[in-house]
Image 1: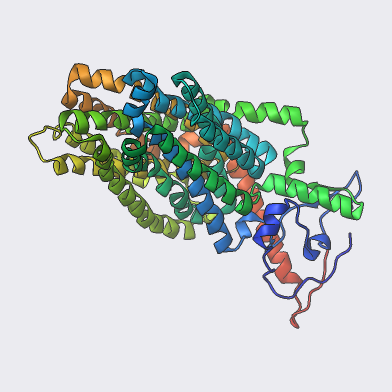
Image 2 (image 1 turned 135 degrees about the vertical axis):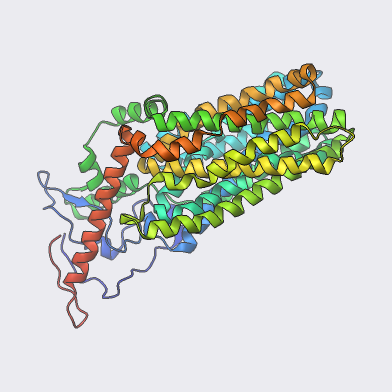
Length: 542
């Protein structure tokens, strides 16, 4: 390939979003005529990497494009979590339609959440092998089909199977969305992006009962599932049109393949060279096993997975507990009992606001840190705050839900643990993404496995526990769990750096990111050195 004089302007025009969506190997004149390192022969191939101001580098996309993609991931995540709890609002209607017990209808939510454990362990690694875009397309198309087929269920067994499948397939959102955000943003800017894609979706489980209780009473469970299907399908249609590939190893590999075809020269991705060429079958096995390796061999992932599993379990326990407390004890009708989740929603919104404010602190630290990447432990401050407010809110809820005490007092407690859920969750996700950037999808998948198992199990024993222990002591059990977990983020904040030094994947991710940052800085310095005082460019071999 020959070099030509690129534009004297330091910034290249961005590639339109529709072209990015339609092609993973978009080639511009600057890319085609760039002078890559190497000779273009089998023994010395051209090493294809990101250029300075590269229009296809996800980190260098225009801010509006990054925001569009991030908000779409948020909508994807929101629709999935909304689906996880929406049908729980129609439990009386399901019992009447199929003649089954309360425990069996509660299993609907548990099976859906159980899919969170199965899905990410598959879809997270596959997204690192084949890219985020194809996984998004396949999984959300199938999730829409499963959601729609559920409406036609003639018995409870069919409904439970379809709901379990929808949860397992749609769970790609829990790891894929985190991977996309990791692809788009450097550590300094990732905090607000994570809030944007996790904060609103975290309202999904609370929003489901609020919206669907009215619909279930008025129209029945099929209309509730119909609304869920429309929501998921709409997000899928927009996602097909607006979600490009963002995973750098796949993009550079496609670029190298396209350049080889267009020029006849041998081009390979520098990342493939640095990491070594491997058979697809070997890579597949490795990526499928990686979430489990991270979970059981990386202390950081295991510790945070157990912590998040307990927090997550207590959250889904409330979906079985609230109807008991507000319908059975306080006598609220089904059509309005879903409004009891508004307090939790307010707390979750406050958690997003607080995390946004804390992100300013993080950016100030990032601006003083080499490569703009502070230690991941810097992300843990919101989790430390949430760890304190969680048991306070849970104990408050447990001992103010007497019928003789006004319901608003009890609702204030739900605000506190709604705030805690979001603060802790956002903090932990940011910590894992910062610590395992190139393996973010696998790290989040490993975290989701244990978290989902707890989230699926807790609702199953909530109803018997409340009936046997009474609402006050039963509500106190998650409070004691929250109290026992209070030291987790504090311990990690203090000893996290020492633990990470013994974590293989965390150390490897840090090394690769440092090497990539060094190369980008060298490219920028060489580009500046090539420029003549008159504004022309002297082309040199890179």
